[in-house]
Image (cartoon, rainbow, N blue to C red; front, side, top):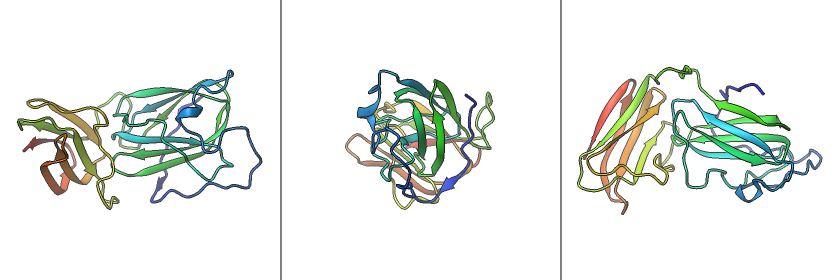
Length: 210
């Protein structure tokens, strides 16, 4: 099954058509439905885009509800992938970057095992992303929440760290699409350690906290 490029930016999540016949896929489809079928196939989702993915949804084209993200509290940084065991069928796919940009593919034939790659034009497979934010934690406490919000975001919605942390004295690099972002780091009690609005990240940037 060939890899797919997902280039279509959606500013909002439109409801799916509810006019198609029942396809046997639970509606909505969520984490509890993974491995629910004895004939399950492997859907491998690989993130090669210069971003971190915070949410991945699969749904029947006949369903008008996306349900719950299959990632739970986890995130998928650039260069990582995850396998899902799902009932075979035709699905719609919704991807939400941690910067809050949203992408959708429709009518994906997932009737057999296959790998699908999320990629954007600025990400060339096998090469480094052109822009990245390296967060250096110079504070005496761990960073538990890292927000890198894109220009379309109205608020900080997604924690790029997921369940991970940046321990005191350590650093972590977040590849991003070149652009301008609002950036904020918080400790584990949600106290702001550093925040910066309209931060240009057009190349690799070092960001010291605090």
